Image (cartoon, rainbow over all chains, first blue to last red; front, side, top):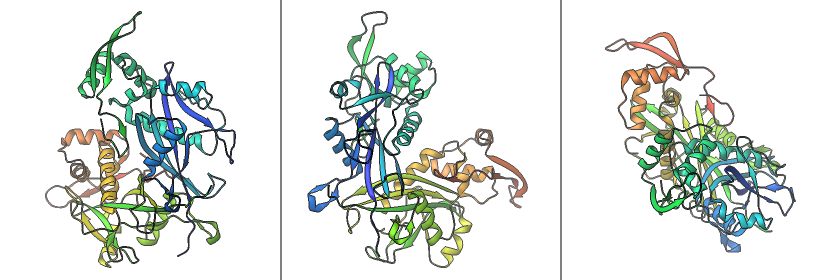
Length: 229
Length: 229
């Protein structure tokens, strides 16, 4: 049987909370096609034993690419959907395994400073420049997944600094889910999940100082590699 | 840049309800590797314009393969996960886009009769012969997805004949979710979903005749192609 193997890539929708707004991280493309356009961090899956560069899975490919391009491992990474077809990449039939990544803003700040990365608000509607490929659709897929998974889990804590107030977490939920949450109910449900640890750090010297919480240390969630809450 | 494109396939975990048990459909492999072993229906994604055979997406590839191998289009098809790596296929680095398909048992019966397909119970634990590739894991991924999505939606009606009793649907839920459902609550929630239409067919001449329901006709759910409840 003769067949032509398609192109296989990964793209990562990296989200963070910056200035009380959910943002997606984009990078200008250095190569054709779409050179100069804003795009999701992504790249080819390495699958050729002859080069000695072989990814163990598409998740490992996503981690390698994030390490190379952003310099860190995200606090949450999960596979969302594989988008594919003959026309989405001018180089040929391609499939991209789309990943959702969550991380706190501090790690992205120096990259934004250096001009390597730009952050763009995605809520309530994405405000984005023209993007390479079908990356606008890939962002929508990841946002839908985040919204579906966020309800009453501690997932969104991965968007916040290591120590945060319950009110910060509630704000993240309200942003992502588009709902208003009752303070007492939210607190009860979040603490019941047993993934938040109180710290002795008090956050906010001004109007509303409050107890700081952190995620249990084992709750770093890399899809299929490290399991957590 | 030089790279070696990986193999891209789709595999379909086709589930049905037969004799009150959830079953997965397997077919013996005709080719190496793993010739003769039971395997999920699946195959290469067609991506070579030179052959004139080009799938529009991996979902279209799954539909084409099911049509070729089983002769019908399933009532529900969705992408579950892309499993990948250098060792899962002896032919080389490969990615398989795993799909979950649901269908009523009647369409599978003639294929089972002809020996083309074998049905194997998967609940509470899969009882399966040795399978080709990592297909056992792919089945587990699809079952996890089914369980996560089944709760209080009419999804599992796709496993039943076109007209069914609410008690048939409840039995399917109890099987898949491993829970016992209160009859009255279940009925209320299912009817509230507005996807079930009462028919004037009465099912069961013996002990428990009951009103037959069907799914709204527009509720055939092929991932990304036809949307429904």
